[in-house]
Figure 1 (cartoon, rainbow, N blue to C red):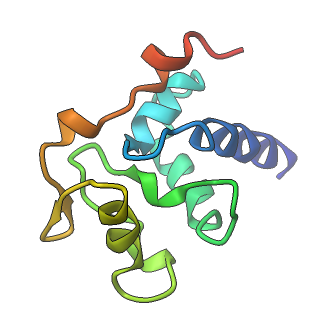
Figure 2 (cartoon, rainbow, N blue to C red; figure 1 turned 90 degrees about the vertical axis):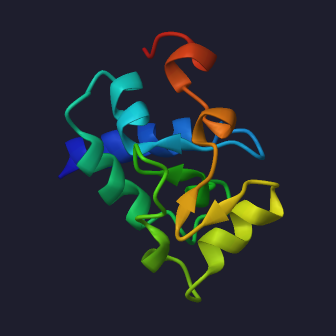
Length: 113
């Protein structure tokens, strides 16, 4: 379990650096952390991050831009509302023009330790 806790902390550290008005994917975080096949584990980490003030969990979506984690936020549309308040367009639970808003930690932060 401690290994998962350490991984989750790394996920939260990366997610905490996603800029306002940008989004990334579970897979992009996993790849950055050297665990490219662990997108689902990043999702599990983000499940518990919806209430953490320093982790903008609403900015993490699936690779197609779907708001797959929205049910982990209080209120049915809170994730969408948070994204739209940052200027991100969402329609039918999906980020519109994902390439425009996508933030790739690999490119933006360089190599992970």
